[in-house]
Image (cartoon, rainbow, N blue to C red; front, side, top):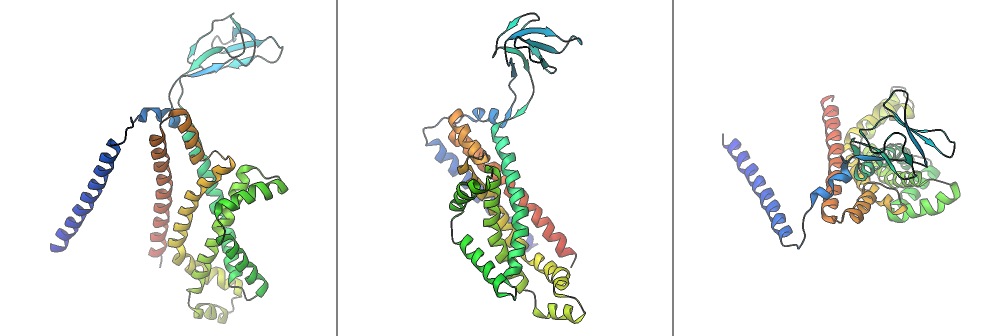
Length: 316
């Protein structure tokens, strides 16, 4: 009974601290000479305003044979511009239409630039995560190899990558290697993030493997297993369970570090936020929204890895 009361007491303390922090932020925001306009940010997340369907050229507007679709017969002789889906006609049948005129409007929800940037961030993070995990595993195995050449190459790679800033590596990858190999911005950004993260993953893998008692490998070899088989079936599964927490932290850092690819004009969540700020004049609202979306991504990844960790621990 006392233990339960103690738990309730400390939970109440936690709630009180969070409330005080929240109220302090509220009071601090009130002292700023700033008018909060969250409604300015909403269209950049989900746009619910009617979309205008614009004429691509000069021509005459006609109704299709079905009596619903709109056909803009272009004066240039090109194929007619057909509008099959619309909510309300703005021009009438037989009207002379000029390029840039509005033919009709469509009431349809569309994702805004902030969500588009979020999708790009997710794509970059997923590609980089997979590549970094594979590359980090290979470099980690090279790091503990008995072959001096492989071991020294792995050490050189890890020390160079961990000893230089990610921002500098992104610039080098895009402006130097990207020019030589004709890489697109997205590809260069993914490679830079993957190479950077793989260096840390390699050290995590190395420490995980070396934490397994040497007797595990000796027992596997005494049963007739080759070194690769013993590593794949005996050592790596155990090391993977031990390295899940640090790997989770590194992958969370990867998601946050992906914001740096905006410097090479990749329209990720951060760059989309900068563009929206210039158009909405609501910097605080936009950056709070961007921070919240990053928090959602990292929290989802953390939750998924915790679930995986519990499942693996239950199988022991």
